[in-house]
Image (cartoon, rainbow, N blue to C red; front, side):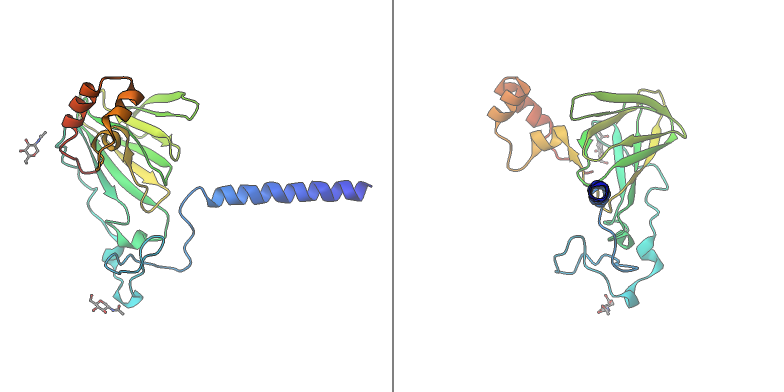
Length: 226
Ligand SMILES: *[C@@H]1O[C@H](CO)[C@@H](O)[C@H](O)[C@H]1NC(C)=O
Ligand SMILES: *[C@@H]1O[C@H](CO)[C@@H](O)[C@H](O)[C@H]1NC(C)=O
């Protein structure tokens, strides 16, 4: 009798461990199967990520990037600029499951509400102060003012934003557990997709008139990078 109870407990523990392992494995990019797989985007081969460059052609420049050493040029209506340091800029990141970005904000600048479908984000404030927030699936807003040297976490998939309500420039370094986290900007994706989301869908979703939908779409007509 007691040995039967023991084995049931054992099976239960194994199930718990397996479930944990599976959810851990799904929490970020897959583990690499070799030392290096420097991205070779010009390869026509379609794999989950990029095909690998021949190791004889790999150099230190495949693992180097100086593009986030200086502030990005902020030239848009929202007043913030994201400069990515992902596998598209650093081919050596291919299959390694991590990347960075730098974000610079003018006073009043906003990195508008968006999600990263493939990564959790950890921001470290280089300079200034930011009001940051994310929204859970139960519609709870988790928000905080963060300043130089402080860190904040945006869990994978959740809508989040950062706003510089200070009177000087602010900047952060963001770290991601994906070589290419992907960004889905809520307003831009809904109001400037190609082909367009029908006005009637947006009017009903936002509970506004179709004419107001048209006015918003006009403002998004010039697509922005990053
Ligand atoms: C290395 O790079 C050169 C120049 O792009 C290319 O011609 C050559 O085929 C590459 N070598 C291998 C082994 O892929
Ligand atoms: C962005 O840069 C372009 C060309 O450099 C300039 O014409 C334009 O006025 C700038 N836009 C903003 C919003 O600063």
